[in-house]
Structure formats: C-alpha cells, structure tokens
Length: 269
Image 1 (cartoon, helix red, strand yellow):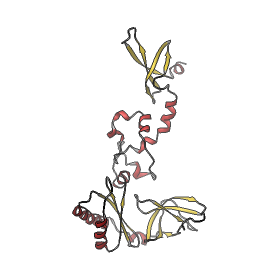
Image 2 (cartoon, rainbow, N blue to C red):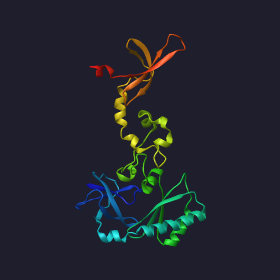
Image 3 (cartoon, rainbow, N blue to C red):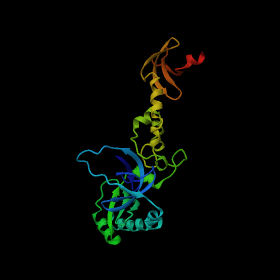
Image 4 (cartoon, rainbow, N blue to C red):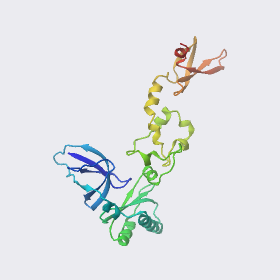
C-alpha cells in the first residue's frame, strides 16, 4: 500500500494516509478526513507499507486540494486576530508561555495554538476560555525552540535564510561531538548556536568529511619522529592536515612547538 506522510502545520507531527489511485506529488496540498473533521495538509513524503494484522486503519486522502479549499482557510489577518486574543488571555491568566502560531482546520471544527515554554503549563482554564470565545474545539501544542525558529524565520550566521525554513524537513540530532570534531568549540556557544539557541544544524553537513580527515592525523599525545627528532602531538589542524608537535629543549623546562604538515614529504615530490 502506498501511503503519504501528511503534515497540517510546520510544527505539527506527520500522519499517514493512503494514496489509493490518486496521482499526487510531494508538496501537494490535499484534503483528508480526520476524527476532528476535514483537514488541509501538505504531502511531505511517500512510502510503501504492508499493513499487518492489528494495525490501525489508515484513512485515505480524499482529494488533491482545489482553489476553493485554499480560499476557505483563514488568512493572515484572521490568524493574527486569534493569536492576539489568545495572548490577552495568557497575560490575564499569567501563564508562562509564548504563543508562536495558530492552525485552523478546514472544516472549522478545531483551532490548534502552538506555543513555546520552558516547562509544563497548566492551560486548562485557557482552553475553556478559548472554547467559549471561538465556539469550537481548541487544542494547544507545545513546540520546541527549533520549530519556533522555523516558524519565525531569520538569517543565520552565514547571512542566508535559516536552513530549517528552506529545505530541512526532519531535524537531526546535533551533538557537541560534531563541534569538537570540526574544531569550532573555542568560538563559544553564541557563535555555533542558531537562532533557536541550540547547536547549528549545519554542523552536521561536513561532519563525515571532518571525521575522514581526522583519521589521517596522529592522535593527541602520540609520539612521532620529525626529521630525526622525537616529539609529542599536542594539537591538530584538521582542514590544514597538520599537527602541532612539542619538542623538548636542552633544559628540562624548555620546549618548542612546531606545526608539521603531515603531507609535506608528498608535496616535496
């Protein structure tokens, strides 16, 4: 069975729907029927699956969205009005949360507010007040700092638009090991963190390349011979493919550090 991964909002999770005989492509807007009514979503990916016994029923995509469906969706003005009203209630209830976005279902049976917060928030009274005001189902979804940056947008350190807004569909784990491998830890957290406050996604782009280059260098602490002198590797320059070698002087408290190109013999040839 061919299924499509459909997302209703940039910060919402993805749901599987069967494609059937429809001719659809990635990024197509489609109409689906959910437990909470009709929804307008975007196709993010396709895959072939074999349904197993006991698996939940996968609902079909009803149709590719037409202009009339898109016209039914609230415009930016209506969305902003909803956010402003919700913000007033948040301030009134003194809730430690920041509203980021809002999504309306196609049928109008549900409004989903996305918010960011440092911890858990008791928003039960907020939901009651919003339900009374909008007279429809209300849902609040807490999102992470990366999703918040994706929605708000900005420029990265490179001067270009954020990767998460342009082409990254799935966030991957960015670790301090990547920053250490690429020798940028010394720059400080501000310079290697994105607008979301977490390590920049682009650290993952060249990680494998740095790993391969790093394998060619002797490890820190290794004893090496350079032009007949015995020294100890105390530093590495991955991109330059060189190492800092510490040599002892004539006196016990004397030493010097020399940068050595590991390919220097090949270059001489």
